[in-house]
Image 1 (tube, rainbow, N blue to C red):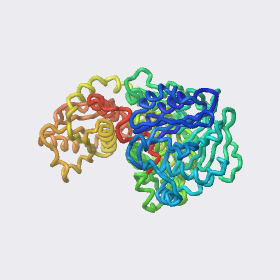
Image 2 (tube, rainbow, N blue to C red):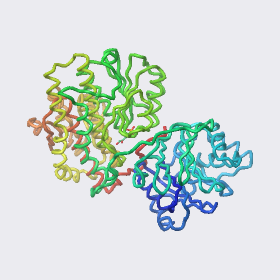
Image 3 (cartoon, rainbow, N blue to C red):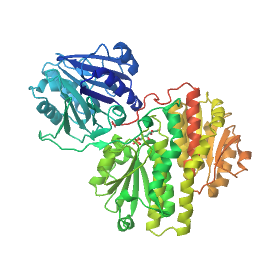
Length: 608
Ligand code: F6R
């Protein structure tokens, strides 16, 4: 989604804006632009395409001198990607300039009113409406004007605003779109996400909904809509700056796959004490856990897939009924939740608009909400009743890998904890599970070391048109993730099917040479899976199998086998996902795709 950056200080703004925007590139965008104010004059450069176009047009910012500026990477929602629709947007007099992340839902109504008053629009964007409204209401007092405009806007926004008659002040405001403020040595910075400011500061303020920020070189002032000062503590970000850099890897995605052993270990270790699971931050007493009658796991995309795996593990281990639902569905269907329901929202970014709305829906109905979140201080982390962080560190590649792996182990930990409290697991079984859990990081490392083999195999399928992923039970959950990983970055059509469902229609698509990736790690479903593999193979499919070591008969029912190390039946997804991630990655690399920034996708989906 769009990224915004703004700077006011004693250094040239443009290079800082370009650098910050580059750090936000991972969010996905199709045009970019910056505006800088010098001596009360605002100049801007914006263009369709990559940020480097703006860098070239401005000679890396040199043609836009000044120490106050805002910048933007746009992910088109209203109006096609084009120079004119790119942000920033200025009013006619070039006295007010705005960048915006989010969607103004009532923009048409507002636009028509402004047109009646004689305003002319040059772009198709909802953002230009914000600029013109600021122009219309401007009374020389930026704070009052912004508040007036806020009262008229419906939707979501993080805005960066400059008024040329306040040439030393940078304004920003948010509602349901992320916004942080960084306090640097040379000045102050606003941004959509922490990586944009890490080079300059580690002290950031997380701005809440309907807070307005006024930054000068020295000061950060935060106001509420009643113009009252809001006092806020800064948060120290202790990530390693390198964590947000490629560190010698060809792509962030590859680096992040290699980060997985550490990320998983960091997520697991603080929660294992004396062979038992202790999740201090859970915010649920044993008594409360005993009172839970139903769990909803609500999420989007890969996080939703982690929820499906979680359902299998939680229901089998703790025997609590679990329903997993896409946040975009849950939020609009009046779900039946109450005080005895636990709603778990899983999200890497903690900013996904649908997941945040689902959280609010659940809370509004009296449910207890637990967030499983990666980005510290994000909206979901702050609004959930309690939060269990996945310690994956910053994830930059659009396609999630390490955060997903951490979401999986978080669901294992929760399931084990609940089973422990409910007395549904013996001490011996718990000890065995804990031992297996601790082994996952090394097993993942081992699987990663076989990457060349998977690369070779992937190279044979670069021209594939359709690839199917099949599995049963928990292996169906990982098939969904394998299929999504492949299609989102390689643009090859792919579907995941519960293997038993194939013959109810989809098998008619299987023809000579169709690649079917079959995951079979569950002993009790092993024979059934073998039959399904034989079914597709006898119709011409080429079968790639992913199975546990020792399952040698799989060789006879498939054309190529990838073995994963042995673990218990609950944790196999954490291992099977590694070859599937590598497979998707190498297919995308081989096809020359932009692996880290696939077309049409955004890292943080802050609009519906
Ligand atoms: C796929 C992927 C997406 C996200 C989804 C939810 O690789 O990354 O499907 O999982 O957009 O995002 P978060 O976890 O940030 O809520």
